[in-house]
Picture 1 (cartoon, one colour):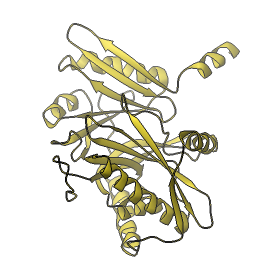
Picture 2: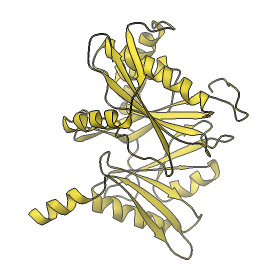
Picture 3: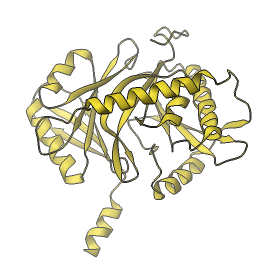
Picture 4: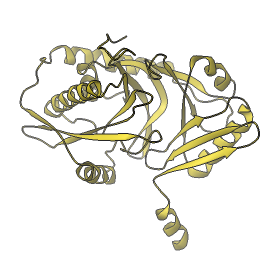
Length: 298
């Protein structure tokens, strides 16, 4: 038992696993912290074999949620093997949208979908958050937003996750990424952290929030941080930004909305909060048009 525990502790938090045959080639990005697998598919076809490999790894690792982002014409193929189309990221591929398909791994072949009750809960959260966001000033005062070194943000990450409060893991979601970090702090209260990872070749960025705001002051600081981060991504010619948040979190939803993000999806059991999985809102914002000029959010 002790040897097994030591072996588990030595496993990398994020690991690339590959499946390759004459007709299939894909990569799984396994995140043991957030308990998510992202599938990156390099070759069309052979979906039953791919599904079997994905399911075997997920069950072995105790991972419940699997995600894949694909072009529109690939969605039907993945839904035929048990995935569910759960959202869209405008401009994910610069000139075309990314379609997010998810699968909750269980005993059944078909994935669990978001229930009607869960849909209504997410809508109630957004209605309340819109009311709060409407009252926020264009310039948020009394907060500090600054870039920080990765060592500062990752130390905060480890502390927050140890307490069971983590949302964003600040781990790689893609391959060959660049990552930046921001600290957002109210005048009185605990600082929070933001991170964005992006790939210049694709022009999209994943935005992560370390933990949910606990009160109005932290909500304001997070909204200011998300606004600042969006402007920095624009400066870097990033076309599209996206992130995830619990579907029942009004404070965090207010911050996303105040920074110009919109709900474009809802994921069944899409985010890890402490020791439990919760449904997640997919938040997106189109930052630039493909020519690199400011564009209107869709």
